[in-house]
Length: 114
Length: 111
Image 1 (cartoon, one colour):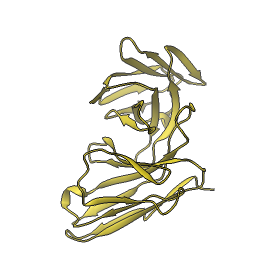
Image 2 (image 1 turned 90 degrees about the vertical axis):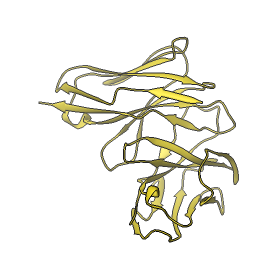
Image 3 (image 1 turned 180 degrees about the vertical axis):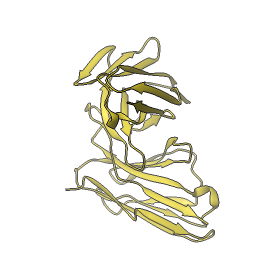
């Protein structure tokens, strides 16, 4: 069983388009995240959601909007895509803070904007 | 702000021992994680330190010194499959379990 799954795995699209990446976790975790990994392999947090509430937004352009229909899902919507948005986007989830456990990552979505 | 530094690349020989260092300067600290990431794959958890000292898990060990803002990951009996990127991440003490990652160290194991 896949713990954190995201779709699609690859996404190629033109500048200016709007696209979505879906993420689902079956671990019963309370918090989900979106990370962006650029061409230099630097993994940077974009959003985290705890119990359907956005609790941090790390200076991400407002063209990016996370949507969480329920605790198990955190989708990423991107409007007016730009060339610089090309990267690998990872979804992750983790249990409540206070427990010494790690975040689990999805397999990533490689977004290419042409 | 968060500043986490690691060497960009390292090379080591199969069967040897390699130590990957990580230094951090963060606004708050609530644990340090090491992740392994093979090319084209997701990061996977290796180890976690929140108190000073050494944590050992098989061929992998991780050390933390909070006063020095320093950690290292020690890999013993290197195997070719250990060629990967190793990511150091610090967890913020905020309401979320946010992880702030270093740039990662790409380790190449040679025969």
